[in-house]
Each structure stands twice: as C-alpha cells, then as structure tokens.
Image (cartoon, rainbow, N blue to C red; front, side, top):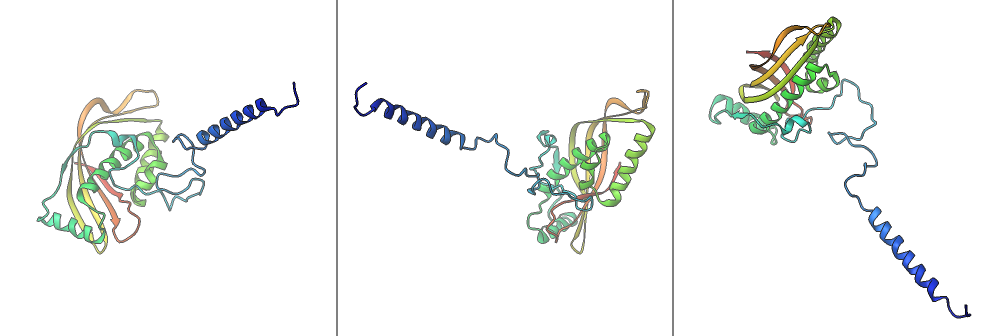
Length: 232
C-alpha cells in the first residue's frame, strides 16, 4: 500500500452509514403491530389501574361494540312512529342527550343481548357486572352460583336474532327506561354433573325476551344497563 488517502475505507464508511440510516428509518416507523407504551382499555382508559366493582366499565350501546358478536347480521329493526306517544318519549330523551337515537340504541341493545346471554351461560361474572344494574346482577350471580353448586352446565348458542323492537319507553326526570323485545333462535341445554340433560333441548327454539334498560341521560356516563329481563 502507498501512503495515499485510504479512499476505499471512506467508501466502506459511507455505505455503512447509509445502511444504518435505512435501518433506523424503517425500524423507527409504527407498522400497526407494536404494542402501545401503555395498554389501553376498550373504554379509552389505560390498563393497570385497579377498579372496584362499584365502578365497572360501561357498555356503550352503539354500533361500534368491540365484541366478535357485533359481526353477526343485524336483526330487523322495528322503530316506533315519531308521532306516537312512544316516539315522543324517545324524542324527549334525545333532547336531553343529543347523541341518543332509537336506531343507535337498538344496535347497542342487540350487542348487549348477545354478550349478556353468552356471559350468563358461561358464568362470566366480570363480563356481566358492568352491563347490569346492581339488583339485576345480584339475581344473575345468584343463579350462576346455584348452577355451579349443583354441578350443572349451561350451553347456549344464539343462532340468529330475527327482530328487535322498542315496546315501551319511560322518562322520569332525566332517568330513561327503554323496554326491548328480542325475538331470537337459540339452542339452550342444561346438563348435570353426569353430563345428562337436565333442562332445555339441543334443538333450535324461537325465544322472545323482554328486556328493560335504564340510564340517567343527564350524566356523562353513556352506559345503558339491564334493569329487568323476562321471557314472553
């Protein structure tokens, strides 16, 4: 080698610098697969903050429910006539909460129906609690506890929801109550500890459920919670 300037080392250095720059520019981009620095809950609050049962995550009765069941075909919507007494009550609710509409409510009510029915069958208390009023949760939890004590297992599958309709609406002050009629095709079967059928059937059966949801529309909490449930 002569004593001239090492041009080959300069070229290698430039190539290495270019490669480092390209790697940084690529690895520094968010591709959608990275985990956020602080995991976020579906309701927008960061994970890791303990919550008591008295402050559950609310279910927002809107079409964007983040459950897999939300991908199921929507049922037929039976909306009340705006000029009817029922329609006027719903309009009064909308006057209190500008984000409220009957269509949006029914979309969310159907999502809640699917979640609650499945959660009750599988005994998922943590899913049920934020969706029910305190009194209704106590009744559901008692039924689950009794089923578990007896060693029974409930199998429930919603094959389809044929229709949802608002049967009744009431507004007392700013507290609204809306009663919804769900007509669905379900498979319900309860088996004993020995695996033998105890109640229900593995055949598809049409079931009509009447559920009432309530909410204080003047509050910032947008959650409607199940206050009563019965079969027609």
